[in-house]
Structure formats: structure tokens, C-alpha cells
Length: 102
Image (cartoon, rainbow, N blue to C red; front, side):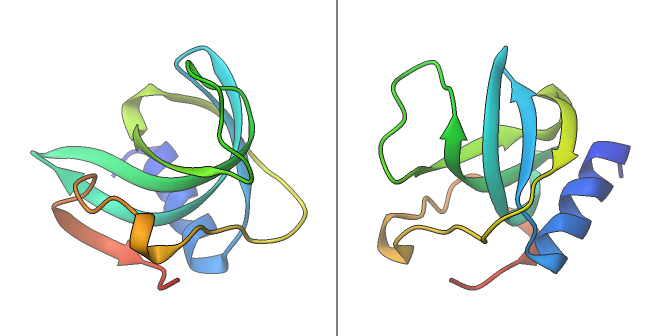
């Protein structure tokens, strides 16, 4: 388990929002599902702030992050965010470690 994975897992369990740099974009998000996909650490997040390679839909959108590409993780204050469970992608994590129900 990488240090970034451990931080994400702790935030998920505590329902804490985080910020990071991912693909050279500053992002604000809440992790919802963490585990493995084809042996790689992945996290399904609900991104509600920051930037993305494409315009971010409002109030936010589901994203799949490869944990190895996440940089500069920091806790954020504020409310827990999550979208409609009907729109949550299910292909980000095959082997679920922790999942926060919506």
C-alpha cells in the first residue's frame, strides 16, 4: 500500500474532502471507492472543484484516479460531496478495499 493510498483510504473512511494535483491540474474531491484495478491502486472520486483536462461539470462529476499519478495530497475543510449513485461509474476499481455508500 503506497503512502498516497493510505492517505486516500483514511480520508475515505473519515469522509474528508481532499485536494491534489492530478495530470497537472489542481483538483478538489472526495474519495468514495478505493482498491485495485488490474493490480494498480485506483480511487473513484467525486471531483467538485479545481480544474480538469475538460471543463468540470457542475456541481461536480465522478472521476477515476490512478493513485500513482496523484501528487500533493492535502486535506480540505468543508462538506462531504457525492453525486447521484446512478451516475457513479463502476469500472474504476475491480478489487474494492473500502467503499462509502452514497
